[in-house]
Structure formats: C-alpha cells, structure tokens
Length: 57
Image: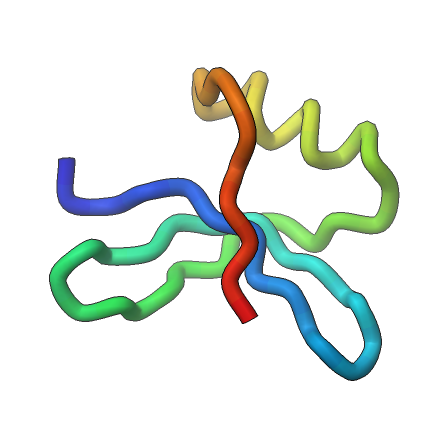
C-alpha cells in the first residue's frame, strides 16, 4: 500500500476533502469534497474503506 485514505481538513473553515495521501511523499490526491456526513460514507463505499479515516490539517 503506497496511499492511505485521509480527510484533508481546513483549520480555518472546517472544509473537508476526502482523498488519498502518499505514505512516502505526504502528497494528497484530493478526490471528493465533503459537504455532509453522508458524503464520507459514500467515499468509503466507493473505495471499499472500513473504519475511521484520519484527518490531516
């Protein structure tokens, strides 16, 4: 596994974007804007993710 799922979260606005972070470089590939909790569930379902997704700031 070279990428892990993350929620990129703005400290100022609270805006969240779901994506994948390269574990070697730290670069985040943004995939989906999260507007409501159901969007996180949709992201997890599309990509087969179980459990919590860590937040990065």
